[in-house]
Image (tube, rainbow, N blue to C red):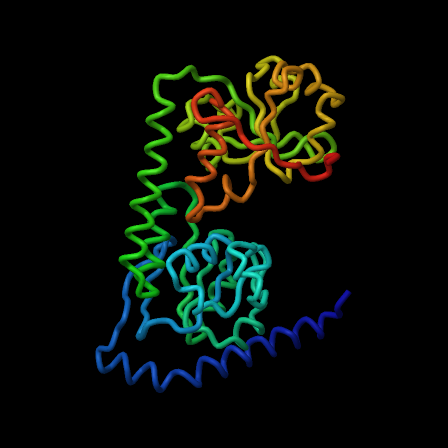
Length: 321
């Protein structure tokens, strides 16, 4: 454990690094601002005003979705750092890691000298405030639903000089998602339950406000977790058994799903007995980025394989191959 004076020293070093970066850019930024040279002016998804004096050349992404968006818009070469979970596309693997989901390593960010930092919606206010002291603009650009994801893509496109590409991407996503919803319209609406975790990990599921809840509805199903009243939460196992959903959907990281047939409560579910347990790619159905339409198709194939075709089998984390 660090001693208090060590923590204080680390904070002083962070402040000094950020102060140096900030002061080194002040003169140039002030001159360009006075001259009226502004590349972008707008607001991020958190309502913060973002001003870019020039097109960003060095971008740091603090959320996997932002990383995917920048690459999808053809601006991947401008990325110089990313979050620990930025694993797609393959080109993201080359990027230095500077953050987890909520906190950034400010010294690493500062050392990369970015002119734009794209933050996630889980970033804490203190980190965002410290990022604001850099020359880089710090924008929150991670969506929480389909509508805000479209807004995120358009905002990143405008900030990076890829507005046309962003508009084309959003147009295609909207069309693909609407096509899936249209095909599911009028079909029976089976009750579905999404397993985030189970057993010793707790019986967590997805409720209203989550992408999964929205996707199940668009795919022509009913979400058993709708009664949660929040995006994520623990579901009472007794209630799940009483509801006996027709379809069980789980992510590749939901746990060893081959053990469901021996798991108390789950073993009695009709979906488990009849093999109606579908495994989807977690990233596709929870990451607010360009691949959401692919995620919706996986959910649609889980809910209505008779319409969309069967979902290709995937190994779940911890399951036997």
